Image 1 (cartoon, rainbow, N blue to C red):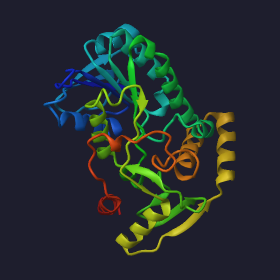
Image 2: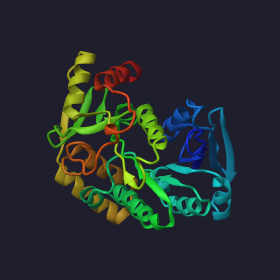
Image 3: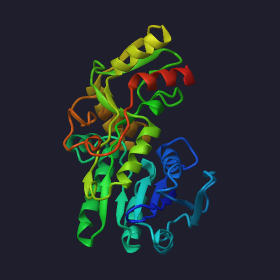
Image 4: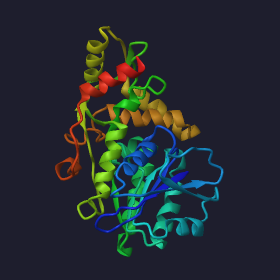
Length: 319
């Protein structure tokens, strides 16, 4: 576990605390640190890391180490003076969020952003589908229960990160831009909301810069909507190839993954259920058409993001 608290210099003058699995890596935490550090007039950044961490962190961020067991008092001391905590921990460490929340309350932190960054995890169908969505939704339930203390929160669904999902080593969209193969969920026509890691990180900074507009609610941000078939069509045009396409039977895939999760609590099954939630209708991954709350795009300062440009960059980088 790594954490960062950037200090906002405007308005409230806060210090923001970001928790992330690998602040030195290529996940949302890494990009969030870069986005915060790029605005020194608004933020300073302090990273909290376990003592066993071997990660390297960006220059410009202070690093505070705590014991691997995350003792409450050490977390409270680390968060002292911070105005917000932004968690970007992975699913495997999500149980640590309760410790972070409790410490943040005792440290008089004003705002907590849980590790949301996907679908809207308050969606009942999504929570019933996937243990990942359910665990993250449970964190939002916990945060709501703390509102009476004066503690505030914001959950930020960002859709799926297309740049990350198209990286061949990950291929989370079941599209491989090197082998020109894809496996579609059902007919592949469900249009879900997408962002990229840098764009999502910038959007999160805009949430932090708008505390009064974003308190105690889910604030989805999205760049564009596109289906698996839409993405493949753009890739075929960009690469001048024809993709070999197969299909998941969604009912069979979900049934097998849920059964395996119940029996084994295995991460591959949990992640396949996350994929189902993104690529099938009915689980809220279209943050506009299936959305149950207003998107932050309507009241935050968010730039345009073009799917064609993201696809072109992925091909140039990975194909």
